[in-house]
Length: 307
Image (cartoon, rainbow, N blue to C red; front, side, top):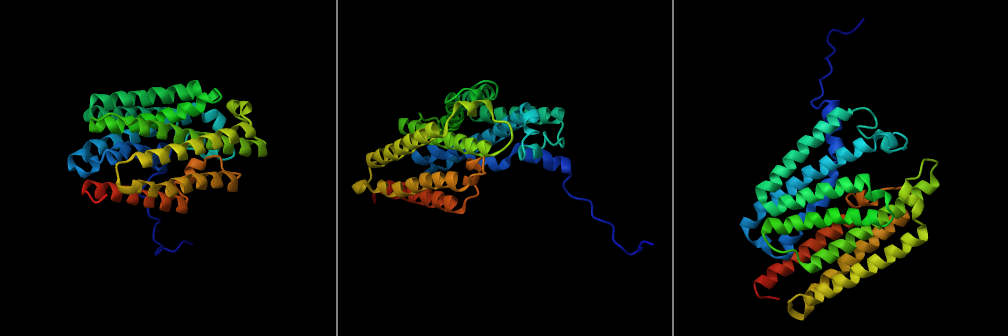
């Protein structure tokens, strides 16, 4: 006989459906959109309060657009994800979110994201539309083409940085363009290297593009891109009009961050998404924070004529 004094279980505040939709949006991946803030920092526009609202709106718009892209990608890959030991737990592949619900969510997020981009300015809207087009091409065509897939990923990041510049109504620095290109190619190739190792060790199906890559090729490309990124950043730091080339003090943080990524690739052999490790790896987060503090401090001191 049940105890009449036993309290009834509380109804959960958040329904499983809302939680599944939230996970489908992948809010942890919004950290990739911080590239929108890069022009704000390197043009020293962060010192002007009027520069923050358009940049923040552009950032929020790209967060919504990237979530729309993730929803469409999961919808497109649902059948393949069901065969994957980890991706089968994704909201659509697991059946917690229906294809119709995912499509509706993607449409709403896309419209809201484009609306925010248009509110900031026409060039930001162009960058946002380009972001959607590039991701659509990546999902349908580019990701199955060897090497082109890495450039497709890099293009999405470049458009984020371009949107940040457009929000401030400034031209994108050639230094920033090449640095973002090299850095994101390095991250994309590292992701492919990790996927190749993981799928070689598993019994699951191998993605078509991975059959055209080899470990030796990816290791060579990683060595080239990491060396080029360090060299270009070093030259960029020496080119800054600061006393005694003091901006070079930021180089160790960049070198450590790149080396840490290579370490994570080798130390976590079963991880397919090393870019996700970067947002949870404490040493990496501390390193990025210190780099940001040093960069902003130097720019502020330079503005005051100290450096």
